[in-house]
Image (cartoon, rainbow, N blue to C red; front, side):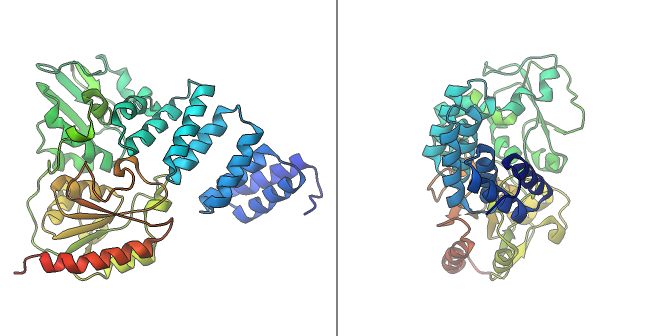
Length: 387
């Protein structure tokens, strides 16, 4: 199509539309620019737009064209790595991240993201140290403390301060290591909603406040750094269950199909409403959403989960909670935007032995996942003892 204006002006208008949320107008504008010139910014922006609207095949081609125009740009290869990690093409993601690191060794986020790729492949020995380069660790408020970061020194007789990071699921997942640290005293900060649940751990539990406060300790550490400090491998992951809760009577199947919408890749991990409705229509299904259960915190939810026969959930904190309790749990996973901890191509999890993983056969195909759940549920129900 004819632009009717110069390329730079047309690109500016397309970017403005993109920023305002007019994706259709932005796409039209970018394509018009590319009809006139192989413009790297238009290629990159259109690829991003296509990726966010789940048109990954064309996005992949445009990212490739972009890379041929600016092959010496570390930012290009970082973006390619992010795209391939999102689509589950881990070998391509690794190649892209390593190329970005060759071009700019100072990119800490690239190193951390490569670490996540390697962890997803089960390559823990190389993955953990790279993940330690994550910028949020390097910028954490804990660095303002008067005592040093724990780097793996023996903790016998020492006091360790664990400063919270990341989401509810991450905090539940890492809580398993409190008993493995061997410190004389552990102070564990956590989200307020986890405080009652974590009270059973051998640690002083401190609900996270807005301001960093800590009495004298020998070391501090972030919870997601503990596996690296301990040199954790798949064979040495502390097994679940490691949390308990008194069971509330009820039985049945607990369903949780909504994640935190603020999470960058939630659009892929959380099924649409129609799929959620199908799951809640399963025989004996009850919603585990706090608005439906009345749960005030994770202790309440843990007690509800403890009384169930089975949990069916998308990739939410409830998956971690149920796994930490040792409850049979079926985890529904998308093909795109897969979290590193669920690894690749497995139906089980070394982090939570009670989990069974149900994976989309192709991006967006939640219907196939629900069909597999329905098939297995009949067998599971027959195996559950009846009152």
